[in-house]
Image 1 (cartoon, rainbow over the protein chains, first blue to last red):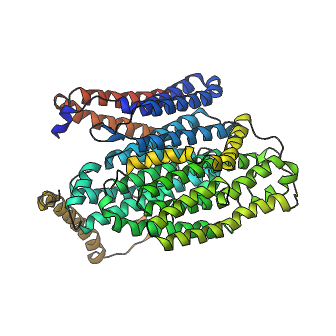
Image 2: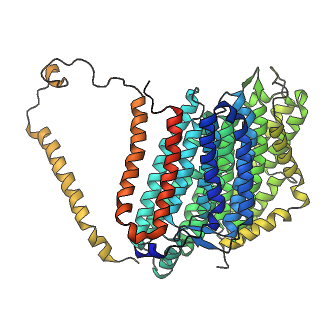
Image 3: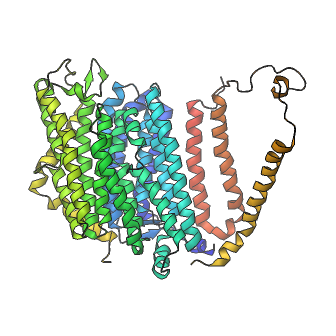
Amino acid sequence: MSEFGFLDFNLVPLLPEVFLALSAMGFLLIGVSFGDEARRVIPWYALLALLMTGVLVSQVSFDDAIVLGGMFKADAYSGFVKLLIIGGVMATLGLSMRYLEQEHIDQMEFYVLVLLASVGMMFMVSAVNLLSLYMALELQSLSLYVLAAFNRQSPRAAEAGVKYFALGGLASGMMLFGISLIYGFTGSLDFGTLTASMMVMQPVPFAVIFGLVFLLAGLAFKLSAAPFHMWTPDVYEGAPTAVTALFAMVPKLAALALLMRILFEPFAYLVPQWEQIIIFLAVMSMIVGAFGAIAQSNIKRLIAYSSIGHIGYALIGVAAASEGGINAVLLHMLIYMAMTAGTFAVIMAMRRGGRSVERIDDLAGLSRSQPILAYALGILMFSMAGVPPFAGFFGKLMIFQAAIGAELYALAIFGVVASVVAAYYYLRIVKVMFFDEAVLMLDLNVLSGPQRFILACSVAFVLFFILSPSAFIDSTQLAAAALFPGR
Amino acid sequence: MFNETILIEYLPILIFIVLALGISGAAVIGSLLVAKQKPDPDKNAAYECGFDAFSDTRGKFDVRFYLVTLLFIIFDLEIAFLFPWAISLKDIGMFGFWSMMAFLGVLTVGFIYEWKKGALDWE
């Protein structure tokens, strides 16, 4: 490996990641040295560190710099997704602080693990080598496994953590097997070299496609796309709500961004081969998401199925294999993230007698006891169901437009039908809140300032997206164009 | 690019796998087929230097052993990385040097954390 000789020291494109990683390690040392005194300030420092990382991401010039010997690429696409990731993580931290205190699990390790997971996700979207991709994915996954079991007193959280860890390990194994096949038949792990190999190797050896299938299966697990979704409801239900909020918002975005980079960079010449797989995953996810949620009585399980369904819609956009498709996926995930943040603020407000409750029936009579909360969740549920004029409608609209643009008519029609079925369970929550009689009232004034702020932002986004959609679509378009340079 | 010679280089590994599977399989299956099997409780008991077995082999033991094992693995890996790094240092230059320093720095942070947290105190 003589190429190590002239590796450059250019770490400037890595500045945001390095800063965030150093902050996380610094907080770990501060937290372990100062104990209880540090516990109160570290959440705010973590938010500040994320904010500064966001500023760094937006300030670092992209110009498609590839550093670390072809391991890491900073382009407009990764920059945009990183900003979304940081935004999602900041929203999660804002939601988490009060919740962790209420549940007596407000240890500083939570914030350190969340920051490390963010570093992993930021590396994921910038990875342009199968090795750095795997390393980044594991950094993210290992942090998330621990977070899932963060409430050590709760057997269900432990179960969630173990389940997530065991199945996640299996998925990583499948991915590594796929990567080894791809490496064995192309002799390279680098995305650029792989692209060139795929171009000249026509027809592509069967084993490479076999490897791609395993790679996609591993990624589908991280995305919780059906039929690799089995862990999702259990982990969402068992993990502390703050962690569930993180799971629902951020890692899927990172995994989806990674999936799109893999499919549109090294495997851009294999579209007919992978398109069938993505369509299968999309259809299965939409079916599971729509029908699985109907029988749920726990709101976190319901959100889990809802997220499986939304991944299904996003995969329609991936299957379209066009710039418009990527654009639609990014916009859809952005809107989904905003809606989820608000939904989890309401879930965290569901407490009775100081204990958190999670049944959908517990929301009964909310419109009389806490009308603002009820209307907020009502708006968010209508938006999730894709009812115009709320933001959720536009995400789905763009996705279906991209599918029709790629002549995937059947898939688009299927998506519409699935979202009609899904509307049933979103509207059921509205029905419970507004028309059912409360047996027991929920506690009043549970939410902290940051939680209220996030709920307000989320609802405002959903309501007023229609006034200026171009503000968001322009930036997703730029990001999509960076990944799909006129092929 | 794909070519057959890469696979030929891996042939010894394939042969080794087949041999390993064959010999170990032959030992296990052979004794199962050929040897006379007349188990009784004394034969099935765990062998403890001729004494009667004192206790079950699957006893509970302190969870702290796991912690020590995990901490050991981290530093074991560190050594496993340090040896090839030390030998090839003159080829990998300053980039290689600082890469390892970053790695050691991260490990040191973890070490300080576990020390302060009391993971190394047995009592």
